Image (cartoon, rainbow, N blue to C red; front, side, top):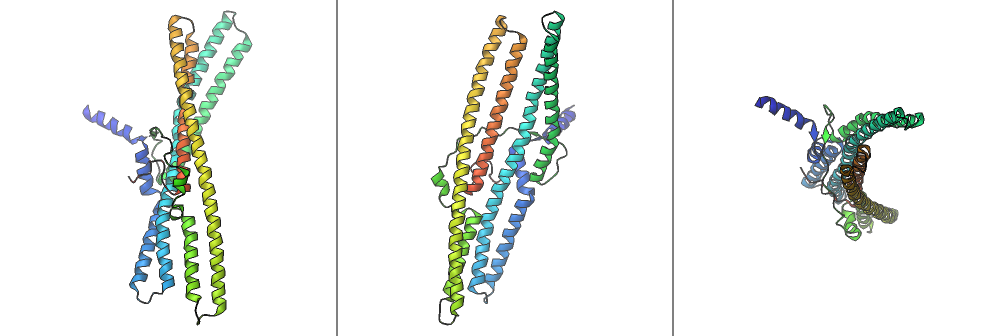
Length: 340
């Protein structure tokens, strides 16, 4: 008997997946992130080989050091992109699973409304049109549920793609933790941005390399045209750095504003759910007092489910906004991307 209970528990565990488990799988199996790690290893090997060769010139040595520094930042950027992709896939499937409860409740309520409409018509207290409307509402509720169930396979496939492995069955996803307000200011996120974003680091490295080329060409034994070409290249690199920085800052400011707005939606959804909880409490007391029908009480219960789903959607949207901001800032702001 104990063995049967254990096997049942194991099967249940295998069909459920929480965020930590999903993140660990993605960390270990996602192809994009693994490629970033391999690129860093290759950059380490290249630099070691050049440093061990006494004939290595300063320019290729500088380029190899830059390549390793860039590979390090690209690993972090790949991790943040993976976090964003996993959050999108995870929350999309989670919302679909939780929304099925709402849709099933809507269908059950539509069935009850239809039964009531038919009973009223039989008693002469409702028309054929009332029944037809109730039947249409039931068909609409059934279609919404069927469509939602049909979309789940695509959402599972999207999650599999991020995890980097196939799933034997659709896992039951656990809710994410309650989100907290953003704790970093915009100015704090701008600080050191050029050291965290691959695009900015690459642009800055291009300036440094161009400066080195000017320095190497600024002498009596190098043709003047070579020096002029190096100076022109430096000017181009500096302009590119300015443009890249401006774009990065604009993107950071935009995603920061979006995260702030998403948090505002979370607060609004929390308030709406609290209000609906109060309304449901009043409805239950009214039902006990006999002043409203069971059908009216069931409607308020469905309204609460819908308010809970709206809060879940707002919270998940905020998590996704934080992940997008993290990519723009080069820093994990969710707290969900710690090393497993």
